[in-house]
Image (cartoon, rainbow, N blue to C red; front, side):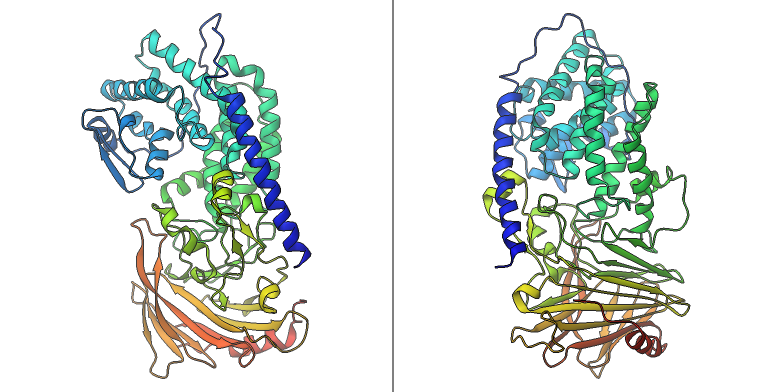
Length: 589
């Protein structure tokens, strides 16, 4: 067994032990029944409320008032009972309910009825679950609720009587104290950072918590420096994490300023670094690239965040710390995953999609995609979409380029299935020429099991109308030829469901028709192109059937697969491709 694999397993065992101990210690020291608050000598006070940047819909306030709660694709209608007494149709639905993010819709309606309805629902929760509830007091749900209650305090406290005001503040302080003791239980990564942000909001907004501003600011600094990479990406490599984190950091910056305190430099630096990544991951049609857990693009939230981007300008082309490359020419956009596996504790949502790419055309058509994550019922699809075949890259022997630990103990303690192994060396070279942008990368995710390294070269024409690619299979031991008998590969290209594919009569390609009648040709130099069923999960409307182009072969007999994608009937970039192969040195293994 390789030394790296042994280290990964030892790290995994340590995380399991540490996570179990932290959960036990946190629940004992932070449980409301054990650490009940001492009677306050004077009433607490809420001094400020953070801004909520998420989009609100006033029409949903009427549905909530009528007892109809629709979250995560499920609907529950109250039958005279409290919504908090109703059986949850799914965990996703319950998390949305107990996070209280829906209060913003009541605030958008801005009426005495919706304010009274909000207070009544908060009162019901305090009465039924305010002492303890397994899911409601889970750190990630709790932090979301603390932020929601603080940001919607204007809705809840306007016209409120003194008794509700005190019950509300007592419950909020109790939740903040419990979160302070159990924040470490939150899934490592964005959920843990959200818990720290919630504690920072509480310290700044609640009078009795002001003494903790310095300590929580230091904890915030530590988490931001650990999680926000130098290029602005998140350590989990999930593009969606950037959106969620910025939605909390921007209001937090305003809260510091409103309290006449200088925001910590780490907060300002994190925002400045993360903002350009919003543009980096956007395709020509405005949607986000579907890598490492990204689902449907929240277009309204992205535009809200971009309004805060004072720098603007063209997006970055290289995010080396996050492990992504962006090639943009003539309006065509190619985004490529060239990253190593994230740290184990940050890999709970990571995908095995190294060297996968997505391509959108100059006419703003999303052509080649990855399957992505669905907006709801994520647990039903998670294992499938994290696997390599769900990405537009190469699969060897129907195996993923990384393994996932699915044992119940890890899922219970760590909150998900961490990724084990995966690519550890992903060398990248890039050459921006006048006639084309050229990217070459390789990964060793299959080297240990099958003795094969996958190398991919991509060339995007200067006008964005042609994309050439070459997938090469190299021996992991440095020999010129693959000798492994387990060498069957599949080169996959998942198409967006709006694209219609028709196979060419000779079997060496396909014609692709976009919704606006734009035609693209996909051809392979040697080999056959098969059209197979696929599924696109990242649409706002849920899973949709689509098509994938697949090239099968054996690395020993056909170690090089050359393919071309070009608009209309234009000739592929044969000259540029040949020049790239002859002039550029092969990547070291």
